[in-house]
Image 1 (cartoon, rainbow, N blue to C red):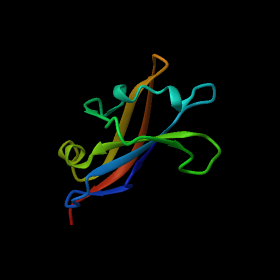
Image 2: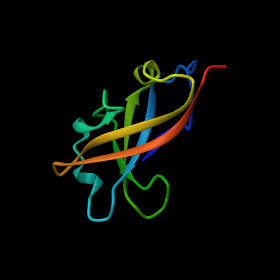
Image 3: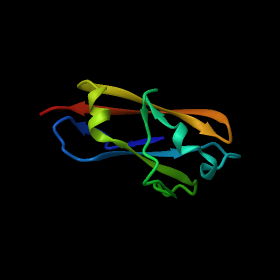
Length: 105
């Protein structure tokens, strides 16, 4: 999974943060239940917009989901943070993590 932006400025006014989810071979991102996706166990992914593509151009399909930036900022503190994404694909739980830096200039 890949959280964007890699550096989250607490003073930014943007509306969304974006997460790209790839699954191991044998699983399809088309079968991810978007309503099951949570960031750090609490923040639900927005049901729209979502997009299946190949964001990192590695030949593996990924699912792009969005989270409300203001809500995400409210649970993070300044410094290096590990972001955890959980959800289900075809009823099977999955989890992924990414590390970001949180700043407030």
